[in-house]
Length: 348
Image 1: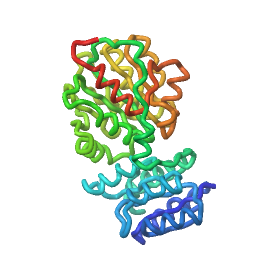
Image 2: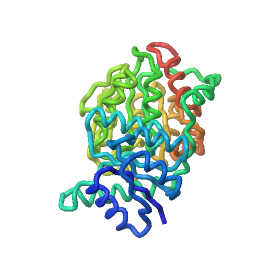
Image 3: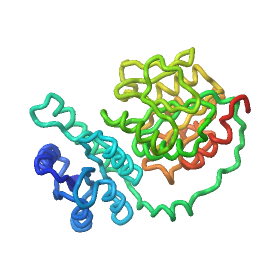
Image 4: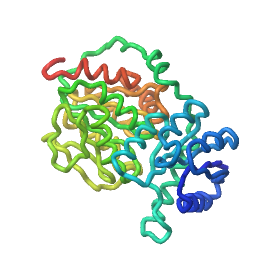
């Protein structure tokens, strides 16, 4: 049985969330609170397996509550957000940066056509995220003290013309850290597939642009990716690159149940760019992209995976390591440092 604490200030939303979660025989709602301060106290008293967290609350918002919980009483936290305003999006993604595992849309009412889909997504997230083993988040000063230098690079890359990144659970904060560490005149475009609940991608790229200073966009079909810009697969579309380097978006069948899929992106990048590509696989459940990262390495491309210590979930990168698909296993700061040093136009 998965014990859940609901943190939500609206009485109507409290009842809706309790109804949805209580409908699943594997989930038990053990408490409902309306503000962050009470949430911190109830987590210590009830010891739930997971918390669903609202962002906009009185006294202490969801970002600050998440940060406090992950430093004092770490446990899986799923952000349940109904607002896409810039200010609330900032708090949402800062909560993910502080250790929340996922963000899902606040379910629409029982009479709405999208209700069943929203309810199913919430339940599936609670089930899967409850299994994640989270760790305490150290205060910022301590994290900076633990930073390690870049290990010696054993293979110089060819001229890099594109960087492809795949990520799932825990990815948004890592991507933000990587992009923040890149120079403003970065010599290649960055193409990203980030598994994320429907409705949040535009807010995510806006947040990335503001907080990292690296221009980020939801990709459009036919885009010609520019150096020093990041392009993200939109909701429900595979993102690939064609032979001419332009972005191709399709509604093809899901790849291993996923659309967009990292596998599709990596496969197309390998076919188009070969040894002139860097492939990076970050934190996430499952194995999406692991096989394709191995093929990229076999074709001479540089391949990097996030290390286990910094990964919320070592599923995707761990599968790549098992297959000997990675040239390098780096922490996020080291990934950014490697790219900044080696992705330079016309240099090997």
